Length: 426
Image 1 (cartoon, helix red, strand yellow):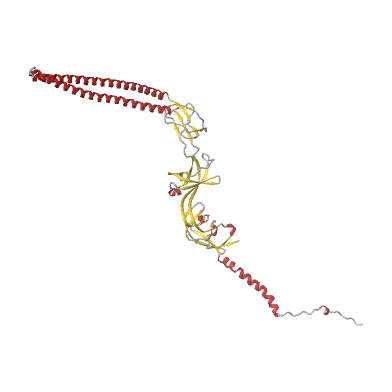
Image 2 (image 1 turned 30 degrees about the horizontal axis):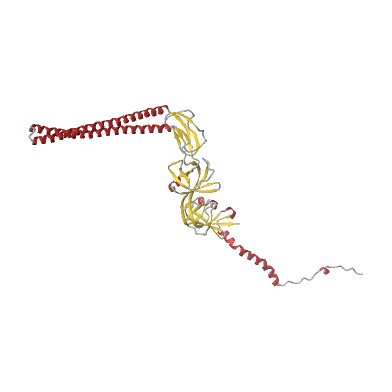
């Protein structure tokens, strides 16, 4: 029987021929997807092609330009100082004895120390003795004046008696002469006697008036001497009373500037007293703000996470170490718990401008010297020239180049290298 060789015909499978439409469909789907992807990515590709620099949004700080009240201010560190801290001086030369120690609480008028001045005490005793002597002399002058006035009155009265006697004698002589009982010579003598009596009376009255004026003058002179001596004694008594040094305010004793039982000279500083009920803030303001400062400016003092209103009450007329010294005083209730030389943040409001275009302050001011800003829009940041005005602690005034609602980059833009467009990536 002949041998049969097997072939592969049993393994062949008839394949159905695909249609050309289905072939083109399968080929077109990837191309269509690719085209959609190109259309979707085209804006990003376009921005990428236009951008000169790209950066991540996470590295940027943004702020929106807005309109409102712009407050230009300066923030400095202030030091709490007592607004009333008098230094007391020795009123006279002597030896001082303190009654208190440094740091002691004292009340107004409380004795703090005493100065022993034998010279001043001796002068007071001498002048007081002179005052008593002048008072005695004045009393003696008053007695002598009354006595002299009595003598003057006596002289006037005697002159009046002589005048009345001469008048009677003249009347008698007139009647006798009319009856030819006396001679003409006797009659004329009676008239002369009357005239002498009248003159004597007139002079007695005039002399008495003049003497009374002299007595009044002498009495007033002695009285003025007494009053002058009383003023001198009162002044010396005041100086002796001031030898007891008293506290002018309620507070705490500061430093004792001399040792106990030390000999001091007149007008030498001996101790200080600090009034703890009235504090002010001493601030050092940079020289660049000196021309903008004015008395009465509003200020704010931050203490214990609270803000207390205050007022700028003094500004030094000189500049030391590129700084101006000023004083700020609380306008309302002073916060409790303040301590001398405590450091507090103080904000001085230099200017207020309503309805002003402004933006939050950032490092972009230093990067572009306040003349360049990058404005965000559609994922891109466009470089724009701007003009800025006043600057505060947290905001800057925008004069030109930006509009309300613009969003700008306020972080440093030095890394952009002055690029006109910057791509912002997520």
